[in-house]
Image (cartoon, rainbow, N blue to C red):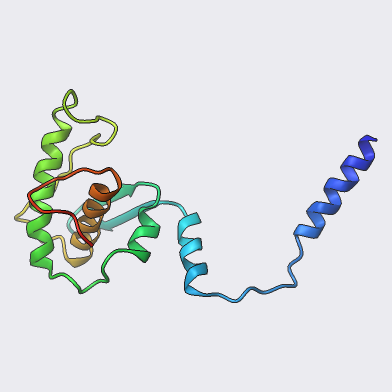
Length: 146
């Protein structure tokens, strides 16, 4: 009896390993791939010695499927919003008795006098929008919108 179960499992495994089919790729498939990939986004610039690491399940898929495309917002717009969001976020990190310490774990070192470039501001701004929508938080006077 053990051999029959083993043989059945091997045959199911071999049947599922069929590689002769080539699926057509579409935007829906790309979104599914983005969902299954690692949800860690790392943005680094060795010249300015900064690094942003975003670890949040679903953010990678959200940035691809929901967020406004690059170029939609100006860098100055995102920098202004990021300064407000970072300030509020960091204040919440320092008040774990008032705000959920699982949401606000580490402070963000974002300095307004440093030009981080468009990509960093884009990713940080969109992460704050994603964070506010996903966790039903409000980090400033603005209603988070896409």
